[in-house]
Length: 95
Length: 256
Image 1 (tube, helix red, strand yellow):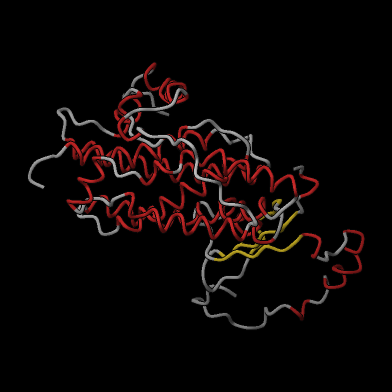
Image 2: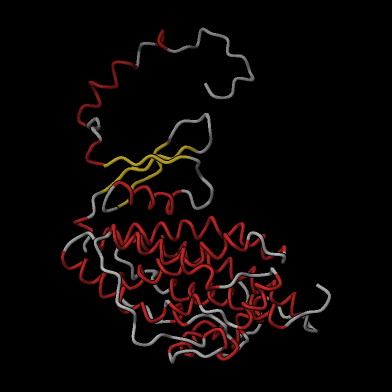
């Protein structure tokens, strides 16, 4: 059994109800059920979460660093897209 | 309980020593498992068992009521081989990964039924320990189940090695269900349960896993281990204790 035969999985953990799943890291596992269990052992052993998602790394389509200029730079001077013209009540925690 | 019965202490020591000695064996897997993820999984199982052992040995010391009181460290680190009351299954040396999954499947299934039954113990401390532990061993059983299914219903080699492991472990299984003297007393008092009362449920669960894993239930073994609950152990037990107890005995009270 070598690591070459175990695919890579990305792990997303939700810390508590109401928050969204956040990428926690990655791990190796032979299949999706074992990936979920390994994620439980690796990423929630100190009560970090109440829910876990695992996704095969190869199923993720990611933007490339080469495309950074065309993907992200054009947003730099569009200040009108920021919601800075609204008053946010102070007791709204997650916005 | 008006006066202490030594069988109450012996019953608790049996439960605690099973957890402690198996935790020691599982700890040996760290850096030896097939993957680092499995190092962590077996390490977590071992740490759960250490936690159970600490509570159970502490309770055994309280019930014993010696003067001065023997605490968890005294009981874990300063008893000799003949005073340990674990079954011989848990002290057997680490073999290949399939052997460990076979052992973990039997042991965690036994512990799962045991702790579920101990929720009603008249020893309220023991019932409390069981309530916490039953969730832990539920996960241990699931972990072993997942692997036995994959190895049994995997490649021809994994199937063959999983089958061989089941045969090798089988002579140590019957001892889990033997009604030793302390357990008979504990069951009469409502403190504990008769090990034999768990056997049908344990066998039923394991049989279901083996069937789904396309594995063949091993033939009844020609001999089976016995005597662990009375302090009779196999040769490997002395070496295990020497390694486990060495630090504490060389440096009494050492902490970090």
